[in-house]
Amino acid sequence: LTITKACSESGESYPWQFYIFALMAIASSFTGLIFLTACMKRYDATFSSAMFVGSFVISASIMSSVHYSTFSHLETLWNWILYPCGLMVLMFGVQMLVNATAEIDGEFVGVGTGLRRQGSEGSSSSTEMRNPLVPITRDESGHEHTVV
Image (cartoon, rainbow, N blue to C red; front, side, top):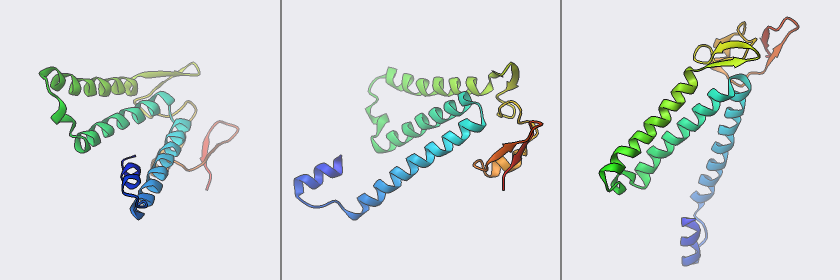
C-alpha cells in the first residue's frame, strides 16, 4: 500500500523490485500452506496448528519490533510487563498442547513422543524427517510404506 500510494502521488510506475517481492511473498505463503497441510495430514492437527500459530506470532513480533520499533512505543511499565508476558503465555499454551496426550481412535498416543497418528509406529521416521512430503501408502496389515 505504501508503494501504491507513493507511485500514485509521483505518477511513476512500480519499481521492478516490487514485482519480485510480490511474487516471493505469494510463493512463500503458498509454500507455508502446503507444508502445514502436509504436516496436518501426517501428524496431530492440534500439534500442527499450535506450532504454526506459535511460530507465526513469535516471528511477527520479532519482525514488528524491527520494522515498526514496537518496543519504542511501549510507554508504560504495564506495556513492558504485559507484552512479553503475553508472548510467554502463548508459548506456554503451545508447550501444553505439544506435551498433551492426545486420544486418537480410542488409543492414547503421546503427542510429545513420536507426534504420529495411530497406526504409523512401524514407519521409517528418518525418511519422513528428511523429506516430509514423501507419499506413504498403507498395506493390508496396516504398515506404512514410502512410495518412491
